[in-house]
Amino acid sequence: LDPTLDLFAEIERLKKEKNAVVLAHYYQEPDIQDVADYIGDSLGLAQQAEKTTADMIVFAGVHFMAETAKILNPTKKVVIPDLMAGCSLSDSCPPPLFKRFKEEHPDHIVVSYINCSAGIKALSDVIVTSSNARVIVDSFPKDQKIIFAPDKNLGGYINKVTGRDMLLWNGACMVHEIFSLEKITKLKQRHPNAKFIAHPECEEPVLRIADYIGSTTGLLKFTQTDPANEFIVATETGILHQMMKSSPGKTFIPAPPTNSCACNDCPHMKLNSLEKLYLCMEYETPDINMDEELRLAAKKPIDRMLEISA
Ligand code: 13P
Ligand code: SF4
Image (cartoon, protein in one colour):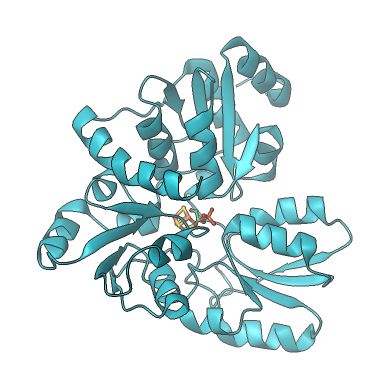
């Protein structure tokens, strides 16, 4: 790629020429967020994908997100900067194993977190995200038996706040499991006025000491409205870009991981780059394609979620 190319200008040109919309998750690198038409959490992105009138959806996120956009828009082209951008949480729940687990519990309905493959969605009754999981789980009668997949941490948190006993699939996100309770506790002591905020994909002991727990959009809104001037943030670092942009006078400290060699970046989300974003728009590849029978089966529980969250 010509290093003198103005990628921001080129991406704007391609958006107009191809009637394309760029949707980006908050965990994308700052340049991608700055060039996006819409930045959001998983629910916001699914809602935008459902209502867009663009001919091409450029999904700056990971595979399951672009796949969800394709499930909702079978006739549109959905491109992703890097097809290898997967998700450890989604990978922790292979459809054949989950199918067997479901068959062992025939009296349970299946509520699945959107961070899963189309194969898992097709085996689910309703999809949830971290911003609507509580409301959707609450919408079922108290005695309804539920399997929650694939995130055991989000599932455990929802069990706690709803007083349920959902059966949890043993999956987790590699980014949200690395935070050190000990280091966060020490950091809180050194910053007594800081609020500690966490994503519900974090482990239970970390969530227990949080002042606020929410989806990426929830965390961002909290930092905008809460009077505190300092925040310790337990989620992927990409969200700090919007936090700093919308509250320039406030301080944001990424929560420390257990291993000091590790960082809070999602290696899948960060596979995408501005160069790859430009290339996928220019050449319209890689794009998402899927079997129509699978798409229709996976669409049902997504539609149900979007109806409840409208
Ligand atoms: P939300 O965007 O729904 O907060 O989910 C976070 C996440 O891990 C996405 O991969
Ligand atoms: Fe998956 Fe975690 Fe990365 Fe989100 S942050 S894409 S849940 S591995």
